[in-house]
Image (cartoon, rainbow, N blue to C red):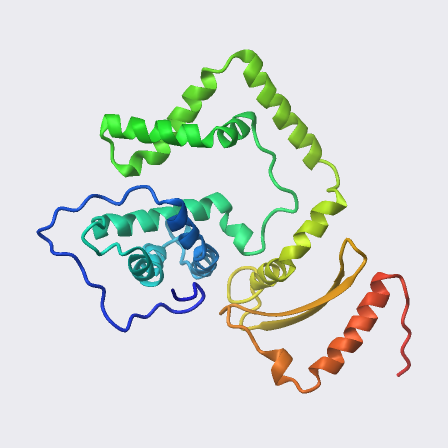
Length: 295
């Protein structure tokens, strides 16, 4: 499998099935297939944000880029998916339905995670869930099964999945007793109260696991020619943080609008000396030691 961050190229064309063979539509993606697709999701979000920054005035601000997101999926994901899961084989689905399913999956999951989240523009505080949101999360599998059954019984197309899912969720919620609904309302209230206060330090320590990723996301929105951009620019970040065990750890990352990393650490002969000096200064700063330098 090719890396999601690399251009997808095929040395040989896909072997397509004989048109005379009746093939079923692509079904709901399996757990393994979803895991495969998630590897491309952040790259897809980056592409969407870049397209949005280049959008011309028009309906919903997308004039000139309609279809480009789907084209990206068909170019970068579709060929690798077909190879990985032998979709072009005799037991595979109708490939046109697979293409539509892939484009819709990325569109829906990108919206679910939020384009801004992938571009470092997530709000400083997460949005509190409503009572019905919590109910849907706890009963997601049941709602999914009932939605699938309802769609099959009414012979509706897969495009109606979201609409049916909402209808089933609302129906199940309305069927709850007032006591059960109140229990979910209490959970939602407790979550809202928790989010209205300063996060526990464990929250920040947990986020340290993704410090390179989130640092890149925060800076990438400042690249390029979008409203928040500074044109053609590349950043190199050298950082030090203190973990929950009071250990100091360093990291470095380069950020640009092209997602192409700069190999500063190996190209710069003096990098190690700089890294050691910065580590000492930063660790001292974080521990409250003041360094004074004479010029």
